[in-house]
Image 1 (cartoon, rainbow, N blue to C red):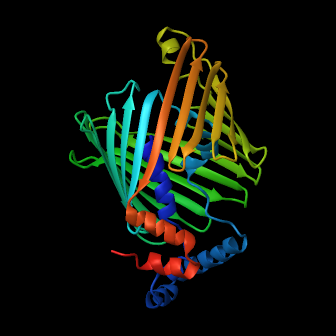
Image 2 (image 1 turned 90 degrees about the vertical axis):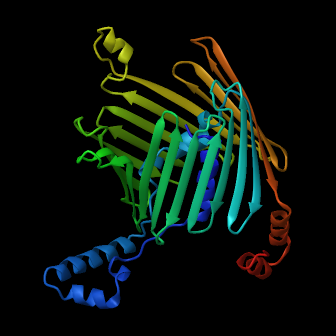
Image 3 (image 1 turned 180 degrees about the vertical axis):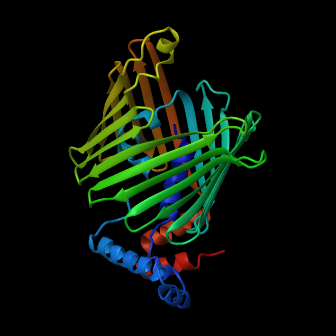
Length: 388
């Protein structure tokens, strides 16, 4: 589950970094291109590629979303799971500068059942680079960075260190005219003459303007003396202006199905189903000697936006568990979130209250005021050469 810091990081990154990709032959110097094109064999390959690229460009296909985001409308936008919490929480965000962007965030939590109750995060970013660092009261350190190598390639890293160990993730995103490729490795190591760690590949391809297919693969070896294992997953996504349907199937027999319907401009409904087709995920039953039995869980939810910028998200699953989250701006820079989860089978209830406070330095407030009141030419000039 993504934390508020990670959700805010994702929002900031999406606003800072934009992707695109040109023709393969155009990425090479003209002299190198001419020499390669005259090489026997290679010239035919490049000619075939250019013909294929021309046909793909004429089809009007666009860059698809990441394979891991095939069900994002259900999980991140409609259902309240990511917006629910337990206990009291306060997030204070302060924007100190716009260009380059510099943001400081402090999070306080009480009664959440975790040891980490305070987190300090700083975020710095431009249109090409992004850095985020965080430290909590347990001295756990988190870092996240991204750099745009070209208009179509972005490299990222994530690092986490605590008294239980460290973890490093390196990944690269490549956005093509009609495909998206993600390469990832976690804790790579060659210390024991054999590679250990996790390698991952996700690929999504636009088939038509509405249909996208995806493929994901993972190879891992936890330690050099242990055997390696691999897995893969397949996915499909069909999106129109009013509804989106998606599905993902893994080699282990786990399936995820999602459907989102836009009922009105302010109301969206969603259904998500998790299926265990092999029944191997129920470890309690397996340890008791019971045969594997396929199982599944379905969640139905709705999201309603109101004119006063408040939002209500509610859901119910097939086990009878109810949940809701209400976001409301009680002031222009203060958002309050109230959430609750009621488990009728276990007779338990969780309640959460959160506050998110946005503040700006005087220079940032002045910049925003200029952008709102000045004409477009003056605003562009001000952003291109901001006061120091």
